Length: 111
Image (cartoon, rainbow, N blue to C red):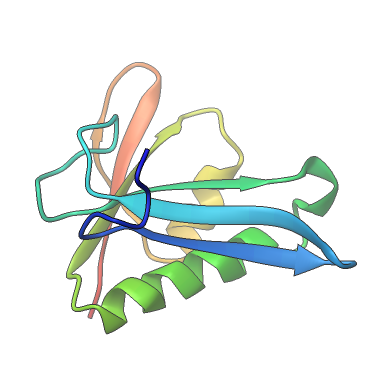
């Protein structure tokens, strides 16, 4: 998949108890969260036992900061409306810019 080779590719991992317990990554691609060809779309995943402990929030803040260092102005993501992570995304600054029956498309502007 050549991840890391394209402009806009960033991935970060979280470690706990000596193991990788989660990751967040972004890429400019035509996926569900696609806004435009300059805005990376994010995805995040945590092992279930490590959810609700602030790890996802820390990962999201870290990747936002990493993109800010690269001069990125905005990030996007798509999330199912029923997903508990919606509140976490809002907590780190994402706002809904579009929705359909099942998903929110959210963006965050990076200062």
